[in-house]
Length: 94
Image 1 (tube, rainbow, N blue to C red):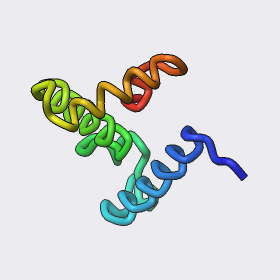
Image 2: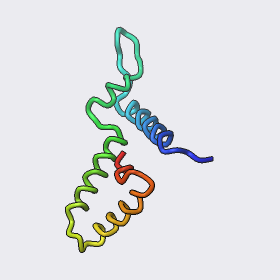
Image 3: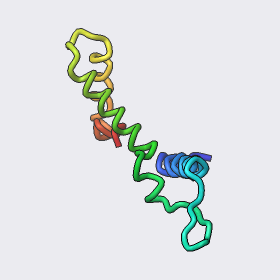
């Protein structure tokens, strides 16, 4: 069975919401205890996927600024050339 990237991301975000709900706990509105809504869970924190995208972009910018003689820069250039034939070069940032 092959799992595509989007379903894997949804599973990770689902687990993240479960953990955040345990950390923040339920809320009491009008004498009724209920789960916190999803928008309340992420008001103070980023989702895992948002954080990963930010860090990937930050790393890409770090490597992009390196001198051409550095090995990570050479590897990134090779990966971009190989991927430009089949996919968008920034596919991994999405």
